[in-house]
Image (cartoon, rainbow, N blue to C red; front, side, top):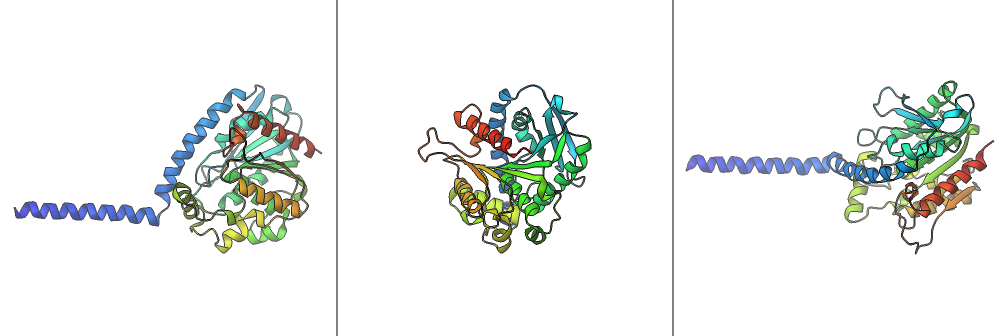
Length: 334
């Protein structure tokens, strides 16, 4: 009997210890919740990418896994351009993928990049190390390094490095916008601690789809949204407080725009939880005189347009977003 009681006590103690360890690990480390959301984002991305594949035209060549950061397995970019472009230089779109800073891959936007390339562009999709593996401002450093490598590779690929357009979706839009600020504003570049990898005169445009652009609008949130925001904060910044001075001062690009930025195209769906970020960015851009092309929809748009709506080319809205994006790109050509 004593042996049984001793076994029970030891078992209870073990269970309590394991439960406590899980509890502490969850709140001390962002990894459990980050991995959970990676799974959610993966399922969402599979749905998007499978739907867009049928819209990819033929005649686009691909050069994948070009290394720009040998210290990171994600420090690579993929290149797409029309098959007949090897002997001529093309305006070059550098696209930064989304994923809430904690998930995603450059492969997620491969099909969309091919569609853009088929319209007469070289398109580079840049990978970067996601959080928690890497915290802010690591991805901005990496994208800046990728731009420097793209310039070096212009003798190998048809990049017209005097005509570079930065583009991104969701978290990638924020990284693209922040990189554009680094290139355009020397004071900001020194503050972030980055030597621009591209000349300001060579950055001719910025495309922002469904971006997270204004830290003031993040707040804490409730339910699953709040859980996600806390996960991103702990993973990317090491803090759940989005009013943290560094976050608010550097990351919140809507608060840092200057008239030195190139022309911008910006869009978001009417049911996108990040819609207000894009609207805030538009107000900031227009207040300093940056040419801003925008595509938004009525509040009662039906069916409602969710986050990353632009990738759904089976819808009229997705087709319109692509058409307007291409029209904007056409206006930038030198």
